[in-house]
Amino acid sequence: MRGVNAETPRVTRARSPHSAPGAAEPADPAVSDGGPRRLLVPAGVLAAVVGAFAYVGAVDPNQPGHYPVCPLLRFTGVYCPGCGGLRSAHAFVHGDFAAALTDNALAVAGYLLFAVVWTVWVVRSVRGRPVRLDLGPVHLWSVGALVLVFTVVRNLPFGGWLHP
Image (cartoon, rainbow, N blue to C red; front, side):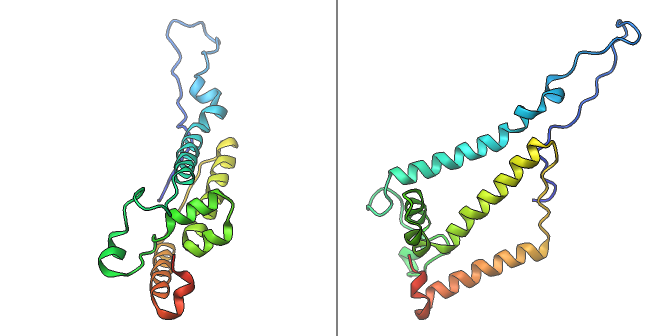
């Protein structure tokens, strides 16, 4: 996500030809009162994530029939990197962090990473600074390698402790 910028662009207003020389132009509320407006997008993202977690917390994925079965697991018997993610979220919402880690450790790491990135986003937005996530090829390949290793290890006999 190169160049993600949460700051509202600065708009300069031309002086009206009918205004008196030296008279101040009315301030643009989108620019002058940027504090609360800057937090609208982070607040919306948080509301969506909290809503999703609330739903998964209320509708137990351990009970059959509420969510679809992972097609990769169903047809091949191979655990994908997301297998157990809903059970992990359910356990996380209910405060059972050990079960959340057992169900999908990678998902728990993702929850914590989201919390850190969202917090940095809010702090930078409040200060009026742009938020940039400059992920280069090394970062993306590293994440891909981590997900691949996690997937392979959880499907090997000695990786049974990573099964959901």
